[in-house]
Length: 227
Ligand code: SAM
Image 1 (tube, helix red, strand yellow):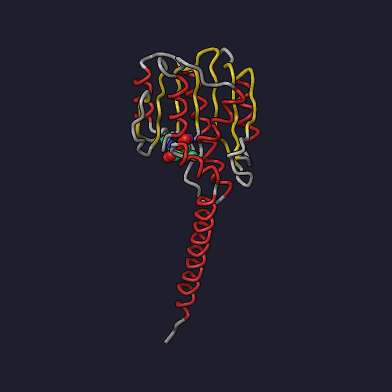
Image 2 (cartoon, rainbow, N blue to C red):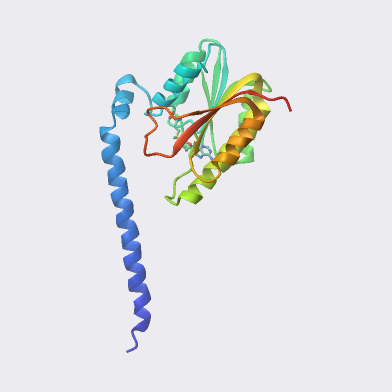
């Protein structure tokens, strides 16, 4: 019997098994790190929905972004730690608009929009919620589902960051600010240049809670230039 064709399925099976094992090992490493992460433990103790809280708290402490009465849009908001912080700081008269494709359990002072930000109808729903009023601060902590292929992940992340920038430029007040997550890699210089042509001040931020081994970085743009 000619079994030569069997070479390919066996080879394919081995490769697939290797990929599965690699994924399993990296998931286990992530879980171990997560369980022992001091920011995760602090978030549980202090009632924040995720460790991401400490990134915004540190940036806000340095840059004084959140003030009472502000209107804030939080893109990629689930599970909601940034919205928790923003809602508390802008209270009692301010308002937070939180958008994510994942559900967000309701929070006082926060209007939740569930859907994909890249979807036109979801963007329209957010704009409707804003009722034509401008926004003081746009936050974007959106991160695509990572594939592990750096170049693909960077491209997806910059696509989201560009859409968030376009939204911010359309809705920010003249003294408004835009805080956006990006991943270091090809494309970051071009994105930074876009920010520099759009804002009077652009600052990089890498809060301590952002893991040093992660290529994650934030840019803060202040005071959009008039167009
Ligand atoms: N800042 C959040 C907090 O404080 O809890 C954590 C945000 S988490 C790092 C990134 C979020 O971006 C995820 O919840 C993910 O669903 C969301 N996201 C990614 N792509 C999105 C998209 N196209 N539209 C809406 N949300 C998106």
